[in-house]
Length: 553
Image (cartoon, rainbow, N blue to C red; front, side, top):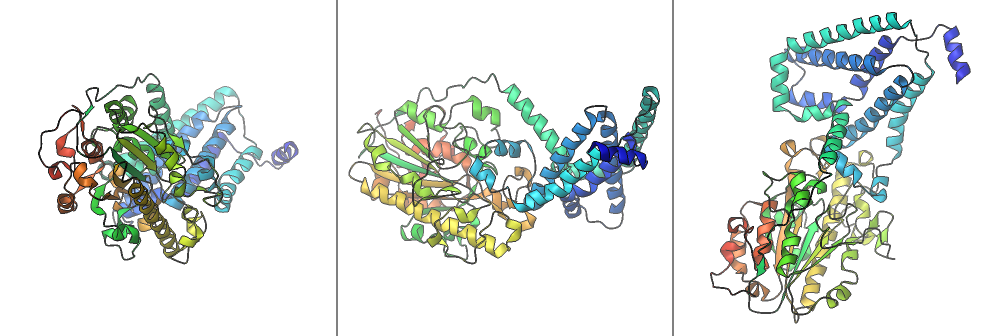
């Protein structure tokens, strides 16, 4: 490599720092920002006077990038920093262009919580090909290209002039379309996350600041006055199944064109067709849905700073079991009650290279229930792997490939939308069977418990609509595919009465609008827990509960 650099010097092939900064800046703006320009085109079509807005943004971005690169490209570390920028931009552009994701702080949290199996789904030939073209080759050229070094004073003066020129370019470019640009970014805030690599770097800095600011968090107890109220019948067993990446519109019960929920329909579950998620990723939705705070008040800090639903239930005397098949685990929700992490298990027949099917959640469940203290209420939380992508085909056994042809690849861009939807629908069909097996479980324990099942997904999924795939789009701009989730309720036999609920009354109100905000208070109500943090107005079942005086248990 040294000899090659000397040859380039001899051939007078070299580059000054300002010229190198300009070349890299143009390269980044034109190759690493395709998602930005595409989204800009959707928000502001390239026509008429909007041409000036595009020109203004082009000048602003190039001027800003040249300015920054001129400052950071210093001797010894300059090329290393530029290489890092090229790598970040290439990785980010691949995921933004391929899946339509936004690289914000929440997305980085999702990446940090992804296990090796899930991460392996994304290490594809397409990714490595993209990195070769847009990261490795440019970095190799950067490493070999000799950079002209002038005397210090002359070099500083030259760079100062370039920096002043960049400031002038940015001021003129942005100022010429100031009103239009301010309005554009105010109405389409998502565009800021798509400016690459500014968006990803800003997200990383924001995450680091948040992690630093949360290092001293002390968990605050809630519901310290929680107590169980007396009720007729046997101890209650509520199985709360937390779905993963299931979207409402692909549930047969919700009027979907395919019957993806034949078992749920046969068992006569109570369906809630209009339920909104708390977020568009598990890292946000899962802690939020178990929090006492509604989505409008919830923050990540509050999710960590305060106890949640399972803590209150345990304090009231309910025995809590949390079993998890999602690689990210409970996201801290079950930290104080304990969780069984089943996603790293391997059981012949129900596991594959992508992990285990959700049947693992019910394996050995009889032994778990047998070990509980008799005569006490139980909450059993089952957190699914569900319909997590992009390798949908790994989420169900081969015999559940009812909808074909399948997309048997994690490279969704290699499949047609029909194949992707077919494979995704097969995951819903498998979830339908898994929920049926939960109901079978409750029927087996009818002599010991009054049983009920509540299923609700954490967030939805995009399957190519609007050019988006997977999930994690900022909530304010997320499509219904990512925010509307399925929810169903089922009572074993006459258990509804012993839960203090009129099942027919629930069916009458099931078509109303609900959200994850209702979960905390509805479960407290179902389990007969009295506490100051309970809000009757957010309890879905409150109006279906016959008014009666109840004694302390």
